[in-house]
Image 1: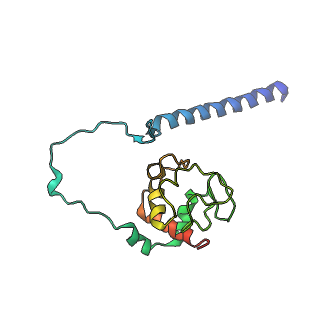
Image 2: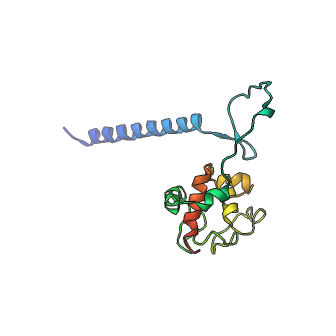
Image 3: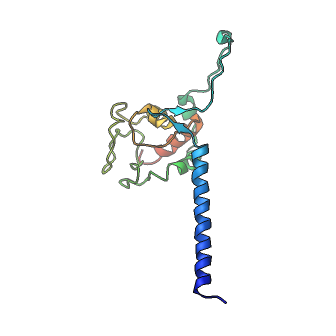
Amino acid sequence: MFDTMTLTKVLGGFCGAFLVFLLGKFVAEEVYASRVGLHGEEVMQGYLIGTDDDDSGVEETAGPTFDEVYASADAGKGERVFNKCKACHQLEQGANSTGPYLYGVVGRDVDAAEGFGYSGALEKVVDVWTPEHLSGFLENPAGYAPGTAMGFSGLKSVDDRANLIAYLATFGG
């Protein structure tokens, strides 16, 4: 009843189903992924419909500045935000991964992690990783330091950035 040919058919069926699922995943990523233009900027798919409204009478209310949010940042919440960074960065000194280690990064010179090969794009923009510079870089790495090898899309929330930097400041500070 259960011979070699039956086992081969069952194994082939599982492999075929797995390939169909992988193909479906690939197609879904291509259809729903955001598109990136030639120069690294994100290209929106759609059209801008112009209106002739004059917005000069409308005041835009800006949220709190980074300094205000950083003053009351919660390192505990920053630890949860750091989970997004764990794939490429380590907190132990000298433990480089895909990205450089982040032990003592707040206040450290740029491109100063021993043993990591930097792209050189950061040195053109910043000298020292102050909380303000880290916030700008973490908001949009490719926009802040064009040519950086960091492929992270960024943290848009100022609260998340402030909490993350407060958490990183607890290591080696």
